[in-house]
Length: 288
Ligand SMILES: Nc1ncnc2c1ncn2[C@@H]1O[C@H](COP(=O)(O)OP(=O)(O)OP(=O)(O)O)[C@@H](O)[C@H]1O
Ligand SMILES: CC(C)(CO)[C@@H](O)C(=O)[O-]
Image (tube, rainbow, N blue to C red; front, side, top):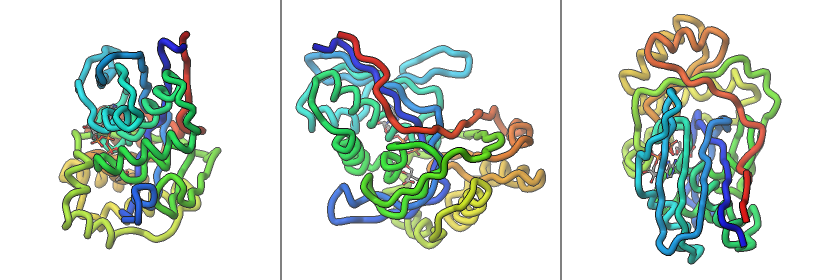
């Protein structure tokens, strides 16, 4: 009998995406490209009589505070699994800023619940359920599929079983991001005009390098209609300094590549240092 299980899942920044409506939730999602980042979500689960979720964020000073006391997509997972538990998620990056944290929370919580209650789900079944919750709640489209592994990810088919190519061991140089506040994913995904512009802007090929990824992402961002005034200002500073940069999808923020990126973005915010993760979600610990 396990008393507590802990799992971790990296986050994901989408550079460009296009929604795909399939014939089932598993074939519904998005195609596009992004990077899986080492910052993500750790989920700890313990048995409880009622489903409970606490969403905690650690700020830059290291202090941890509860930012939400509910997470409908995680509650959905418990309902589908017919289990109740107290789930605590902890992240070090802000929620709603384009770091794919809803997907990371879903994958880590589902994986931990599987261990806690010895449910016998395969990795594929854990991923399928997390993706289902993400699609049903419109908290994301392609992040669960991306966070099955690491690297620079190109998804050419929707859902966790779509064709996914991962470029690993990239000569990344320095990567960083700034955020100017949340851009709630469900609000954008539910907007017809926003999604029509996104569809028209989609660059229909995979990147062959990190620099190419920034180039394609920026082309997409420029045509997507999603660039906010703060993002425009930050992108102009990057352009002037010759720093490849684009908008974090879907968040009101910018991510950038290269040794001078931190300095340039420091003029508009406090940059988060990014690392490309080499793998996807995993169980960290279970205590009997
Ligand atoms: N760390 C988390 N732990 C638990 N639930 C979360 C977490 N992050 C997001 N969620 C759930 O997903 C909902 C939507 O979050 P949202 O998709 O805007 O954030 P995000 O995934 O960080 O952003 P994005 O999808 O743009 O990268 C939240 O209201 C919450 O219910
Ligand atoms: C919709 C999205 C841009 C943000 O959650 C991402 O999930 C994606 O690439 O599908």
